[in-house]
Image (cartoon, rainbow, N blue to C red; front, side, top):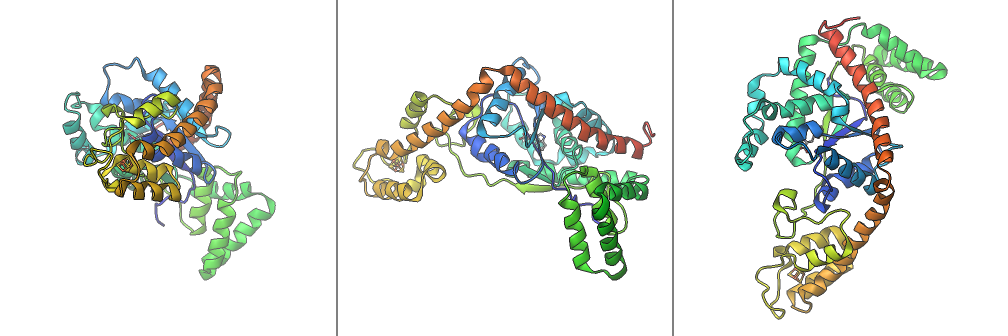
Length: 404
Ligand code: TRP
Ligand code: SF4
């Protein structure tokens, strides 16, 4: 049987960088908001990850975490639907990281592309630490701890999910499959309840005896459609259908986030470290001021010069924010010098201000009530720990550590 996870759980994390900007929003957060209604989702603040590239000044971590979670909530992440938590509040991440570190060859970590790239890019920082080298493995632990089917990330993180899969494969190879699989699977069948249990048994029997693909499909649908059983039981039931067993750490798949090109004010990628951002909850005056001075097609010096939208970062923002007719108007007006850049930016300013205003309003409730944010995270943390403990129990048992 393949080790690829059959779970529909989604897991992803974000480093706490304080208030988010439009690039973060359109790159990841908006996608999370959509996903939460399609899959059971776990989203966490990767605060330990922040330490891997900056351990000297940790004083801002609480504020950055708090502000980012407010952005999550303002953007529409719904704690009634998705599980929101902070990595360092779930110490199980550290234990799994430690155990996985025992079986991970150094060469795997050294060849992760971000290792050398970031050392070159962030030359002013001390990245010659153990923590920095190990950070993709910490990420592997973050992921495998929840046994998700999918990990939504941008292009830059794909290599980290890839190493996660390699580590899972190695773990499963070394420590085998779940102990007492049969009896656990039988228990899980009973959990399905009455009619569903017997239907599952019938379908499984038919598939195993005749190889009938339709029975397999039906049984799978029966299992994945059941929301009362645990993720671990779902994995077992799916594995049991094909007869054999289930991997202790199933391999998750990347869910590549489509990331629109979102330039910052200077035309480079929008990034906090470039200081070229517009905040998700920025005040109208400030949004207007920033956009008015935003870089345009450098060849368009005078109002009477025709411009080329493809050479203009403002145009990329139109792709994200404007409807077709506004875009047609802007492109034609630019090419014919029929409109000036300020005119072109006007509808964009309106849209961004609208969006920021909506988010600011939604954030107010949380800003005025930090306790509410803390309560949401505490509840999320409890749910996350339940899931994490289930995995770690099996991992420990497989490794003959505290086997009971
Ligand atoms: N490394 C990711 C980043 O820098 C954040 C992250 C940490 C993450 N753990 C994760 C993302 C687990 C997905 C899954 O953006
Ligand atoms: Fe850019 Fe619009 Fe000015 Fe053209 S008119 S250069 S698209 S801002």
